[in-house]
Length: 276
Ligand SMILES: [Zn+2]
Image 1 (cartoon, rainbow, N blue to C red):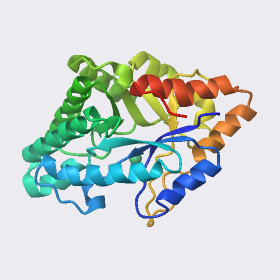
Image 2 (spheres, rainbow, N blue to C red):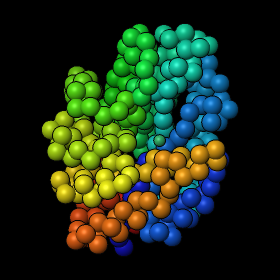
Image 3 (cartoon, rainbow, N blue to C red):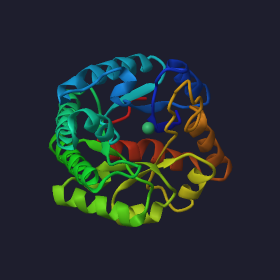
Image 4 (tube, rainbow, N blue to C red):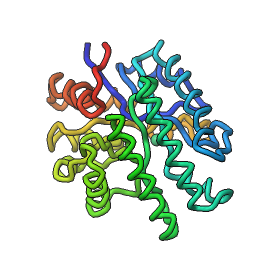
């Protein structure tokens, strides 16, 4: 069987599990489902423990998803939580809540309920102090991931080599293996990521997947499908990764190449064995 993996997808309030049926119909076999922000679950956290309700709900959904395709759970403490939580608690306490939530996410991974955690720093302009605390939260995520020995997906500002270098140095400082740090929504800059050590999850927009493949096989692919009924199809639809993989094959890349990006790389960065 040809493994076709979407490395970053959400299920929210639009198609829900039907999105995965579409993914499967198009040839998709494996998916990494990432939990959303607290407000998507109508949770108003006053401590990291309040993230448990969201994580539990997400894990239940991933169990159901497993009846359709092979689905894996990633527990996210989204960097934008800093802005939401700061309004009520101030920046310092917001950071503390997020760090505690990341520790709980790590415990879930240790218990086998999820395969990875997600952190990062805001993709929009914030105050210098919020930026500083966000970086501390992200470094805490590296620490948690190192201790649990799991991967950490990152949601960050728009890619620049300098920004990513800074993050790579933080990962080095904590001592987490850099290929376990996966940059979600990556551009097709495979050579640069190889240099940086961080692992790219290439967003399957336009001809990105083909462009990435022309540089090598050190990447995974994703849609960041958001499943929001207000924005249907945003960022990309659930069938996109299987379609882009089919295009790769039409362009002359063989099934071995697809197995490398959709199976071997996934197994390597997450430290798991994919079920067939
Ligand atoms: Zn996402």
